[in-house]
Amino acid sequence: MKYDLFADFFVKSGDVNPRYTCNLGEIHVIKDGELEKMGFRRMLSDQGLFLDYSIENATLQQIEEITNPAYVSEVMDIIYGGEDFERICISALEVEVIDDEGNYPPRGVLIGNVFAEFKSTEPLSEVNFLEDRFEKKRTHRYFNVPYKRIKDYYNAKTQSEVIQRMREDFDSKDHEWSFEELMDFFESGIDDAVDLACRSFFGMKDLDGNPAILHALAVGMAGKTKDEMITGFLHDVLEDTDMDIYDFDKLGFNYKIVKALEILTHDKEHCSYEKYIDNIIRSKNELAMTVKINDLRHNLLRGAAGNHPEYQEKHMKALEKLLAAEKKEVNHE
Image 1: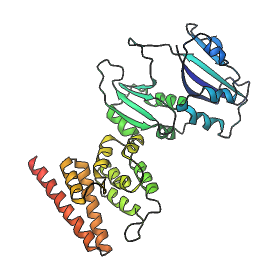
Image 2 (image 1 turned 90 degrees about the vertical axis):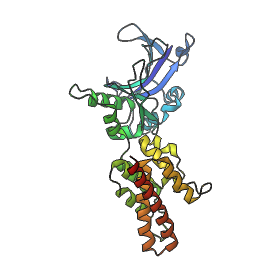
Image 3 (image 1 turned 30 degrees about the vertical axis):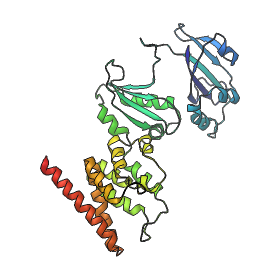
Image 4 (image 1 turned 180 degrees about the horizontal axis):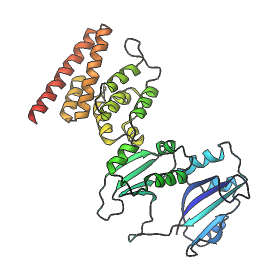
């Protein structure tokens, strides 16, 4: 039997409504009496059909022992958030629905035909948006949003509050949200890219002693679309920091941007610059090619300003090759 675990935090012991309701994860009970050994007492649910359990006056030690690892940070945020609680109640609520294949229902919010699935409360854990989640022949289209981004958007402290706010915002009969609209609404955008670039290049200098962030900002501002600008702001992050390609996906940037960033990253130890440029052309990735052209144009300006002829010659050859490939591709179409 599977139970969802929740903790209710009450400011005053006599309060009816908790200050916070926090998800602690889930627990699978195999033998009768397991929950009782953990300090739970049996209670009937509102419908009287399922057996639920509770600890009416839980201790912090019980909270620590019961909370699943993927939910620890949110519990700690509440316990050590500066508020005092006279009573904490833990509930173990029996999962009431099992599908034909024996699977328990996921936790989340259904928005039209898109399901937002919450698997954890860790800040960078993924919230998966899956299209046609409940159809037997469902598609596999999905995008990820870091949980922290949604919490920050709603200025919320718990998953329960986030889910409630999402239901209020998206449960509208006047407008049925499409998968693309939700992606555009939730995925990381220009502000996130600028913030990440500024933090990544903080204190770093270029060849002439100028702040490295200026180049990233110039390449981003040269973009004509949102994806071009975001990719431009981030195009050197993988190459110049210890981040890896999977971090961008975890941070909620869309798959087109993540793919372009992967192509734009030059592995200098295993690939010559000439081969690197050829790989960009061979990829036929329009976003990567456009951003690289913007990058090279700004590099030429920097080379001229700093009087670096070798630097300029290298990037002029690369730019001419990319422009020729771009023109050839346009004519071919």
